[in-house]
Amino acid sequence: MRTMTPGVAATEGYRFDRAPRMIYWEMTRACDLACRHCRAEAIAQRDPLELRTEEALAMLRSFLDFGEPLPHLVCTGGDPLKRPDLLEIVRAGTALGLGVSLAPSATANLTREVIVELRAAGMQSMSLSLDGSTAERHDRFRGVDGTFETTLRAAGWVREAEVPLQLNTLVTAETLQDLPALYALAGSLEIMRWSLFFLVPVGRGKALPELTAAEAEAVMRWLVARSTEAPFAIAATEAPHFRRVALAEAHARGQTAQAVRRGAIGRGFGVRDGNGVMFISHRGEVTPAGFLPVVTGNVRQRSAVELYRSHEVFVALRDAGRLRGKCGRCEYRELCGGSRARAFAHFGDYLASDPLCAYIPEGGPEGLRATA
Image (tube, rainbow, N blue to C red):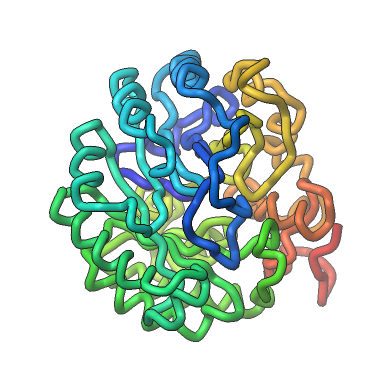
């Protein structure tokens, strides 16, 4: 998943029925960009129903009830920089012992001074997005001219502040041919991780073309090959079958599954929507992931800890034996489990098969295809 900072507890031995590894909080929907793939369908102004500062601080304190090791908090949006209480929240989370990372938008609000202030407040890492290797390609996705240059300039400031940087890239039929050039660009930015977000058709992303299952499989094989030479980690979001491909390649090189788990790929071993991940919207709604909009409750009425541990949706998502279709018959269902968000987006069923996976489970009929 989108693990953004070194030092997050290792997946092996981590009980996902007790606590998520990662909590993504959509601090606001406000953003000055107009990204074509925006999950949040961001708006220009802040929603008056956003969690107020005191509500947000109470929510952070409630995370302590998860116990050790505490989840890592990723502040996202919209654009977190649109909230005037951002520094206060980062300081509070850090003081509580939470690891805090930030996923801001590349706008005029992201200055060198702000990055330094966030670092001083305790921010452990930052992510920036690049969806094209040139200004023309990237800015077309972001909807604002100059965003490409703003992103590269901010990446330099992040390096100056010695903040670990993750680079996020959207994977669609439109970005497919540009991935090698993006990989080369990522290598020049001194990043800690390149995270590739395989499109889930939600929000504005419904209008974008997805990869075919065969194309996705080819991309994952290419990514595994790059991971053996890259000076940074490579991860895939909403494409957990990347682990299956990586494991197969590792076995071909004579590595054991235990070695894979201990390596870079192992940091996401078994993590998927609702299983090690929780998302909280700007209004406090709790869902299993940002791309899986199945609301289980609201932190204004119920504890996030209670919802994560006991709500039927989370409980079901943590039980790979309840998966249906091809995913339910797959021998990799514990390791992978498919994208629950993509299954829901395509079939309206978060336990259905992931249509982006080309793998045929052992013993499955020839030509089997993912169905609900």
